[in-house]
Amino acid sequence: MNKKNGLGQYHQEKIMRIFCADVTATQAALLTGMNRNTMNRYYSAFRQAIFAWQEERKDDFAGTVEVDESYFGRSRPRGTHKKLKRGRGTTKQPVFGIFERGGRVYTEIIPDAKKRTLQRVIRGQVSLDAVIVSDGWRGYNGLVDVGFDKHLRIRKTIEGETKYVRNGVHINGIESFWSFTKRRLAKFNGVKANFELHLKECEWRWNKDFDTLNRELKKMLV
Image (tube, rainbow, N blue to C red; front, side):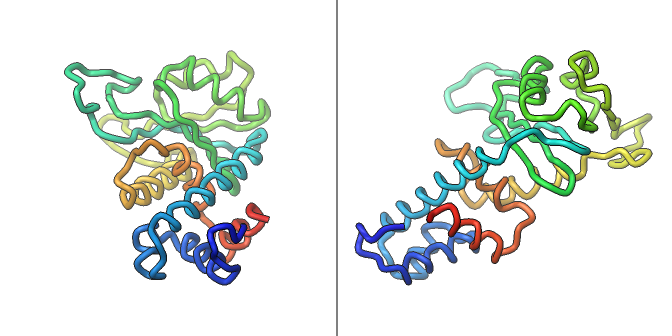
C-alpha cells in the first residue's frame, strides 16, 4: 500500500478491514465518509491482488475432486433475438468449477459446457491420480479415455426420485460454492465487465473467516 493519495496507514488498514467484511464500495464510502472514487481505487487494487494470488495457487488439484458447471447472467443478452445455447440449453454465461475436497476451489469462464471444453480445463488443472466426481452431464463423458481412470458420477434423478447423495457419491462441495457465489454476486448486480475478478474473489473468500481474509490480504499487498 502507498500514500500517494494522501491516506495514512490507519485509514488504509481500515479500508482493508471493511473490504474483508464484504462491504460494498458504496457502503464503505458512506461508513467512512471517504470519497467514493478513492474507495473504488482501493477495492480495484485489492481485487487485482486477489486475482494474482489465486492464479499463483492453481497447481494440480489432487485427492477427491468435484467438478461442475454453473451459469450466470441474463437468460438472453440484450439485443439478441435468437437463442445462443452454451451446452445445457441455456444462453447464460457458463463457468466451470473444480473443488478439491478439504481445500481449494478453481473457476474458469468457458465458452460452452461441451466435452472438449470441459476436458481441456480438467486436464490442465487436475492430477491424473485424482478421483473425479461429477454429475451425469454428457460433457464429462470420456474422462477415462484421457487418463482419468477414477471417475465417479451421480445421477441425481432416477425414476422421478431426486437425491443429492447416492452411495456416498455427491458434488455437494462445488454446489455449495456456486450457491455462495451467486448470493455474493447479487450484491454487485450479477455479471459485470469485471466478472472474472469477482469470481476469483469468491474463490478466495469461500470458507474463510474474517481474520484469515485480513491476514492474507495484508500479505498480498506487502
